[in-house]
Image (cartoon, rainbow, N blue to C red; front, top):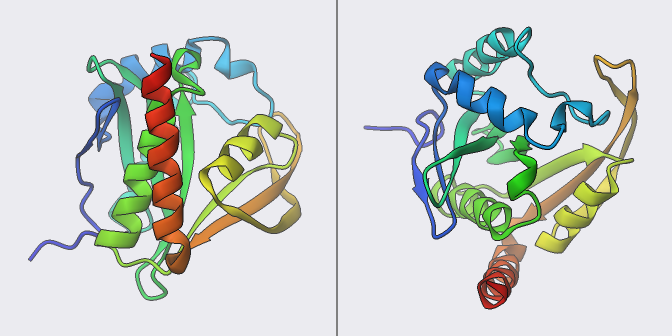
Length: 201
């Protein structure tokens, strides 16, 4: 019998498809990461030609150990535009985090991200039976914090000097969460946001 905590599903929506990450995505992901100078954002660690193979080794190793599920993100036309994952997974405590999200600049702040988050949250709450889903971001990344709050997540707190990034930046991590009892309201909110995206098209 398959275990949804260990096998990466393919999730398909109107704007986006999330499918299992494979090493053959390497060149397409590098192109997506280079879109819009994403490499230059100091609060985000973005794989480069020199580091992407080690990045694959690390995240696929964590996936094999049952700590994350890694997705390649495709737009409505089937173009690779980034990656995201369910990470820091604990089946025993029914907890996951949505993170490791990197998108090409051309699809940021679009209906693609909203729908991707909705599908991941639906999978976490309705398939995995999670009690809580966390989302973390750099405290200084105001655009990311605004986007997370727009989803309906609540700020739990800030982990100060939580990470040292390759740039040397000492990151304070803002920790947000959505709990199972909030999922129905959050889902309705996300459906409304996606309807507004369609109206603007």
